[in-house]
Amino acid sequence: MYRLIQGLVARNADVYHERLPLLINEAIQLVIIKGMQEYYGRTNIAFTGSTSLRFGHKMQRFIEDNTLKFKLKEGIEHDFDEDMKCLCERLQKALEIDVDLSVIREDKKRRLDNGFFVSFRKAHFLINGESFTVCLYHQRLGETILASPYDANKMGKYEQDILFEDMDSTFAFVMMEAIGDERFSAYLIHDMTWCINNGSRIDPEYLEDLINDEHLSMLEIRFDNLALTLRSNSTLREFEKIQGSIIEGCSSKPTLALQIKDCTSKIMIDASGISKLFDSTFESKREAKMGFVETKGLDQEVDGKNVIGFGKKALSELLNPSSV
Image (cartoon, rainbow, N blue to C red; front, side, top):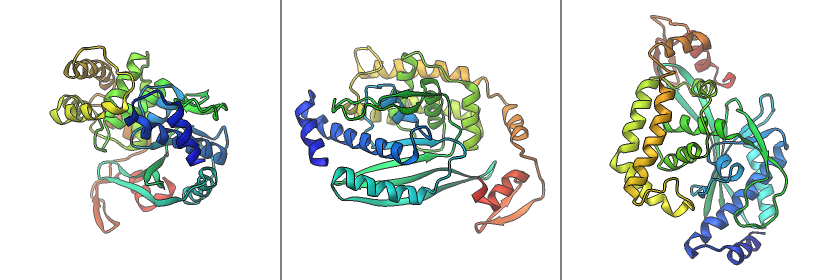
């Protein structure tokens, strides 16, 4: 099937030759999405982030890093390591090519302000020299839609409906990524602007749920930092580099500099409005809501490091990470 994909894409693609590898990778991404849906069950898995925007909402850019992001409905029993091994076997049969499961790891993060959590699980598949990543996020699902995945190659193999988070929920997820701990990606500029241009508005309650799941703190500072990041020279240079994977731009301005300024303005109008919801009292309210209780004088060694001043729930999660 892999050779068939290569042939079909090359024959059907009415694009510049340099985009053919992106189209081939996208066809493989769809095979992975179909395999995951069949494995977990049609109603148990939903895709989020850039995966939702591209395949569920027809965003006009490729997922250049080949990362597919998904969530499972609450209460679905699963063993991520075993799931990914089974998916690897399914991909080998479907593609009729060797697939290596190169990495399965548990991504743990420790925040000394609000405790220990497992943010997501990640697996890497190596297919014909290309790395494809699937990420499972341990978060509540937002609102969802059923849609046949967008098929830029027009291969006609994916008529069945797949669950995606709706535009507003996906926008909240992307905003969570933008103000998070990971390195900021210029793709987020495009994705947030695309959501805004298509009428999306973040649901503040759902964004708060995502923030609580991630145990983010100092939100006012994070939104301020987002403004600085969007305007930094390094971000502008990175944005210029990603143009090859963007089919339809998010601004009609004549130059790249003006396009970025236009995108930045739109994002900050939305982000500024959201940031007002997270004022200086938000942290204390959130800690009370989630059961974090201030404990002074607590000194507990965890994972070989000294942890001081944790709330009771945070300490419990540190000592019993499997309960997260």
